[in-house]
Length: 388
Image (cartoon, rainbow, N blue to C red; front, side):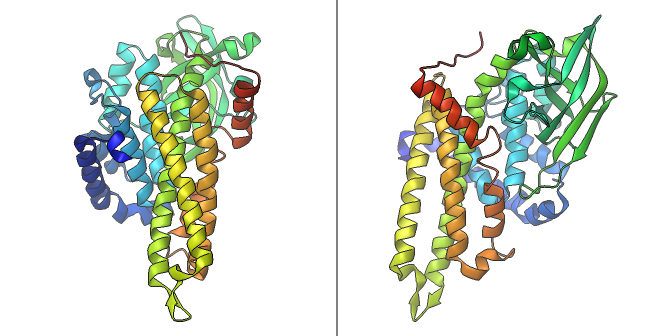
């Protein structure tokens, strides 16, 4: 299947990225998992290698490559066995930077996008709120126009890179009476007076700094508005397709990583005089899980190809995340079981994989919300269209 989507250049890129991660990232993962802080220098190393600029225009320091370089980037990040580290990297490159790239003007891109591609600035995307969750239109944060400034008040939560980032891409209501038609997007510096962040203690993704952020009469220039006022909701919605596909790709990649490890363990582990990989009950479970992962991966690649070709694949990307994350959770649960007592030990990778994977059906839109979105499309014929 790979030859349908990956060229020789893609494969060379994958090998180069694998070598880079083994040298610069893997030796430090356990430390970053314990401290919850990723060494700042690694961001610049990613930037120097061009990894943050894969989808960024060349004019702003990027490489402007096709989406399958991003697919490789995501897949290989899952193999360092730290969902938190992977999330910190892709949330910067494909959440914060995507909005800058698509909605930012030239001045905003020069100030934030170029140094982001270089790894010299870290960004975060602030949409989810304590009382809103997956209900984007129900956000309460406000941005009130005052002369040539906006005054921002409100709070956001579960924000990846929410504590240590240098800038924030923030959604707030500029016209609350209009509901989801009154949301706007802004970019602002971390050190702006009135912004404060609290680090959250999580079950998994422990290497990343997930934060709750408060905005207390934060005054920013009107020039920090991204795109058009009150167009924030369609901006957010059109990028959800990419975010959901990213999480679907993450899911199939970590599933493959877990199964590869478990299969090798089963081959090496002997019980009752033979390798446990010879026991039919385990073999058939591996066969079932591997089949489900392969189906997810194939669907994700097809969806990535369509997105790369310019199609608006919101339905397919939503399905990708829904099914791939569900399968990944099943894979992690069973792989822990394959390892027996060792699967429960922190010295082996499965315990962390199990914790990290559990966020899949929650982050970026819960599975319950995704099912409702899909229901509207397939039952009621609802169409979602990109922002114009």
